[in-house]
Amino acid sequence: MMTKKNKLWLIAVYCIVGVLLISVIACSIANMSYRPQIEDPLIINIQDGSYGKYITGSKENNQEVYDEILEKFNKSFNESVLSSVFSGRSGFESIVSEYGKTNPNTNFTGFRVTLEYNVNDPKTIMLDGKPYNPPTNTSKIIKYTKIIFDVNETAGMTRHYIYYVSYDEATSKNIYYQQSVMCDFSDLYALLLTY
Image (cartoon, rainbow, N blue to C red):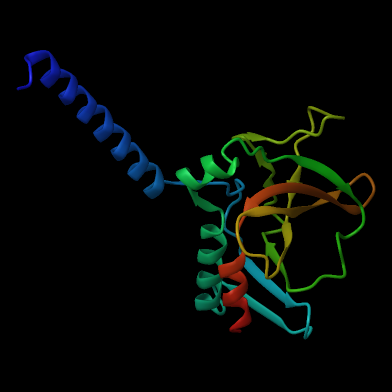
């Protein structure tokens, strides 16, 4: 026969197990996002590296393509909290750095995606909720009108790079800023193969 003390211990153990079980279920359902802090573009241009063909989508022209690509792009940065913790990515820190004046990786496989913004309304590179300032000039705010990245067959959450295209008025040339991001572009890649 169980004593009152043993019954209390059993109830306490059941409560702890229940809380742990609910926590594990919640972590496997809840998503975290590694998505960079960028606004939706005006135009999305896709270049196929194998065949050289171009696909364009915008809110005004080819809206269905625009919406499909943007949806897959946004979802590619999501991962369950549980997967993130067990893979060691929960502490992933996105880093922005100046890449230089040359176009990144002109030879590519898969697809080259360019997100285009209004040149008269450039966007600000954001990092951790604040405008990005280069370490060499902490008062300078970097604006961009395009973002370039490659999409290939790699499956699973891996580190990728996106490149912000910023026009430097002092030199009259584009400067590229590189940001490391964690994403899984496999669904976006599969979608782009259908066009």
